Length: 294
Image 1 (cartoon, rainbow, N blue to C red):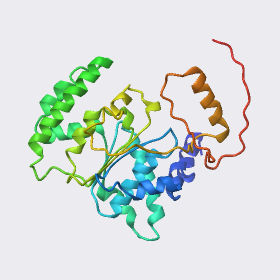
Image 2: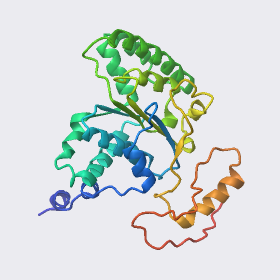
Image 3: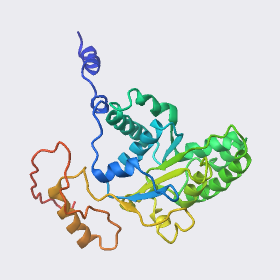
Image 4: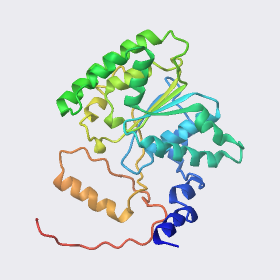
């Protein structure tokens, strides 16, 4: 027995955290559960805002899983390529909640839901429309600065629209009963519009979740009420206010810091007076640690 072999065996004997988590049902509060099990009556389009840790991704995954059990075809789109795996794990856990009423419903995760990051979906549309050369030309420069990247995305929208013009009458093009968009703050409003084109019908459901606080690419400006005219939404944003990723005791200090040092920033923190908690959290002890400016 060598240390290397022991290290390898340990990974086989000790179950990874993510595997044990997948067997646990997904806990949801009443607001999250309502958003996951209902749709807007008139348009089927819904938009949700909330701070980090409020359960926005949870609602996306749960709603997709719920519709999958109804044999609907769903497209779940993210900006981050790795987020799809996290959403899929959440969807599996949500179906644990339904297994008692619907045995075997876990199979719907792979059969009914397409998990995809946005730029891969765009590439797929272009390839299906025989526009591979035009697509490759957009990305011929390996390293792009911010301005060049935004210009590529403008031209990408034009190219995908061209691809969809050619494909929409093609029976092989897959259309969806529901389209879910996570990380909406990283999306361009025109990306949302081209996704609307692959709805199965005008009554097909769409869901957008966003947190302008996490706007890493300065795109939250596209999601103001003024900019969103014509995007299909009716009424105000639904909101998730309770945070489940942060100790309750820390919230007030973050709110005070944001108010004092970030007065002009868009900071989305919990304003709920009801308990805000971190699941399975032990006692919280906070200490002041003075550090040098260096």
